[in-house]
Image (cartoon, rainbow, N blue to C red; front, side, top):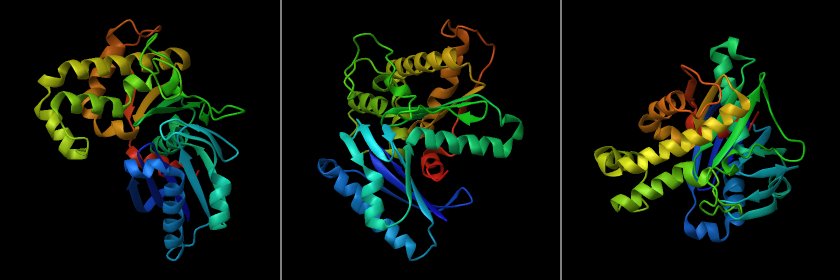
Length: 297
């Protein structure tokens, strides 16, 4: 058995994995107080949970999915948590005395979703796929001819940091107009909460119910969000010409509001260089669990 850990911009997800399936899962949301000493919080939580689970299961290794750039187990830049040059692999291996490997979270989720697709349809083993993890930020992965594309020096494919608005909103990465400043689910939620005076602590089903009951009042926000997502996605389609695009992360919980309209925009606008009458746009089947599962691949 393995332990998969998904370290996000707002929480940690941790699961025991057997045969590429989660058999037990835990989650911790980061408070503002946690973020003031985030590295200590991360290491303490992981150490405590792993030691607890070792008393129940025979754990052979740990995989950690992290946002941002990773090289040799060192997170060079994790902008949404303000972390730089953090050797998470070495620190945790010293505390836990177990093999740990670290990879970008969107690449982990991409691998997990691809494995799930191939499991259900072997004909897609050589497919070209673009995967977007849309949550606190936007990450991505690309499957080309059935294999994950990776950079030599860093994981690469920082989809969220392509610029879609010239002189746009400032991003924590230091640039302006990044895709994730306009297309992340966090940015969307912040806008609708401000418009409808919804407290920040309202999440999940409660938040979606409020949005469903006030669609007319946030119609302009929804339409602009759809436009921004379609623009970013169209850039990726024009570059990679994938057989399908998969949208995952926290966005999957809100996809019923946006998926069909994004697809309609892609097909019926001039955004695509090579126009298509239809396109395979999917919502990640594993949802937010994809990073936990894929971390162990």
